[in-house]
Length: 335
Ligand code: ISE
Image (cartoon, rainbow, N blue to C red; front, side, top):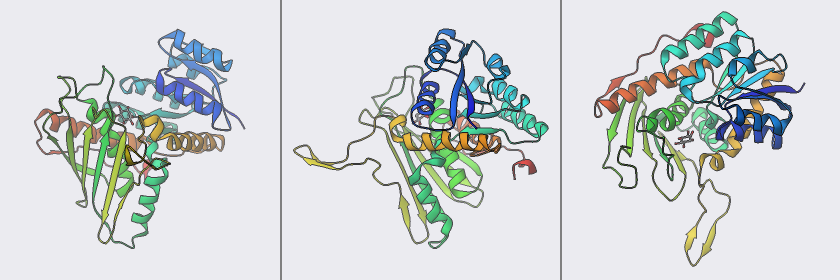
């Protein structure tokens, strides 16, 4: 069965997904595109011979659309996700699932009413081969439990509209999810340490920052978020077990020795660095939808990440105070 996909949000991320579905993946066909900017939707629709819509609601109602991929801004995700659930259509929603826990709870309510898990959140690092290798070593248990994890999330630069809160709800949210997934535990406490400010960021962007988080069993997680580096896109993760320390390797394919030194080329963006993970994530979703099954992270994962983000934002506002994460008990539906 070919899964007929409608894409909501035709900016950079939406178009990147459209291109991968057309060029790199199998089993999926883009049949509709929606964007508040109808011209942007029309361009995508023309390229695939599909239908353009000015709203997600109209696209979801299209009987030719089997499943929906949402790549709009986080703050407008919830109504489209809920509409898709009510229409009984699987959704792959880019992160964050929603920017408030209230919206995430409404999504979980809609899913429980539908009696079916239909929502996958675009936490694509769960599909990155190197993160998976680390998790497999940790899960095997031969080196004892995880004691702590050190993360570094470094970007060369960020767009003009990127604000200080996005250090947490747009950037650190990746480590928040990856750490929950890696440890299999909820994060219960967060503190955001301010750091001497880089002169390379805009004056109103207060970075770098370091998040320090604890899980329910006491695993310590830290995450440097540093997004005006200039020199490259660099993601590091080291998991410290009792008798081993396992970290992401050099992620670039080749090694060069020349007059400039002994080095690997460096990625420039998340699209380069996580190309394999993005492809694996969307392919797994298409395959699962074709089998009428859910795959990847759930609406609960989206909710939990947003709850941790909220606690971190509160700590950021309060100059680094420790903040407890406030969450409902996990419904059995997501067990
Ligand atoms: C962006 O939205 C991403 O998802 C990237 O992975 C991250 O590195 C970047 O900081 C975010 O702005």
